[in-house]
Length: 410
Ligand code: ZN
Ligand code: ZN
Image (cartoon, protein in one colour):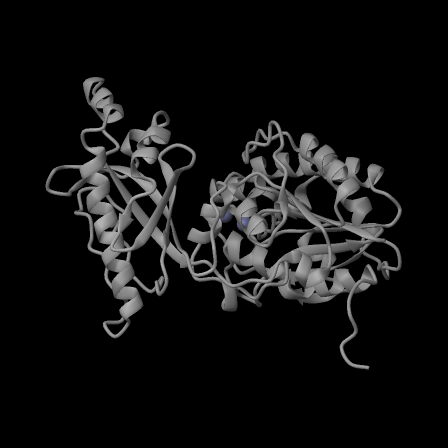
């Protein structure tokens, strides 16, 4: 049976830059393997959500995997929580959280608790498992000052406001239902407020914090949840496409999306999510994963990081590493493997954030109608045979090429 690998260079799409004589970083890059890949593929442009829509990494990945984010996405919380190994169920309300520092009057003095990097597992253990008015509280630490909270009970809602005011010097906010008519939201907001208050009561005198205070460090004495979303009712990747699947990615958010649809998560040594990441180790893991899975999703994060930093040369350097990674993959995939390369959105270095500009995409494999494109970049692939597609088209195009899609009609 045919296999497939989908490689997403996060935020690689860009706009023409003065620094590169009016070329995009992709256009200005030396990338023999990417160009060879384009010349063997059918190319085009992709709007991950829809033309002009500025996509997040989570919503764009959902769309590219064939799950309409307007149906399934209510916030990044559920995917963030799944990405750190929490078991998020349908109907759970999940939040991203910060360990923060507050004064006794609830004024925030440090939203990241001095970027605490030790002892959060002990703090989390003191919080995890509490019950608030019949609502089960599951809490886990993530990297640095981060964590995730899952609230579990029947009849909860994510239609509530944040408690985190997002800046220092402000007081912790009270979570409220977005609509006064919404009993589920009121119940959830009440649980969140009690969670925040209890987190302060439990953490303020915790030994980890006593030690921090003794060392002159800000105590991580409160937990502030934000970005709450409801665990969506999504079909697994297997149920959708009949394909076994794995994910080779670098960030919790992408692993969380993948885990939520039932993919196996494969960690890569040296995959840092930054510009220094070991993409060759990822390439090797992709090839290994293809031996035991029908479909492998991979996300390379560094291109997005360079975009957010406004670091054009950094993006070019990362593209050179991606080029090497693609060379290895193309040399090692079996003959019946399809390879798709794209980005989840553009992160132009001059914008330092995601934009709604479409991204280059190319499909390679048996039966693909190879076009005349010989360079993998935004303007060259615009002339390709695919034309301009949307994220939710990707899996349809891929599964029909693989001959595994059911017919619509007779
Ligand atoms: Zn992204
Ligand atoms: Zn980004």
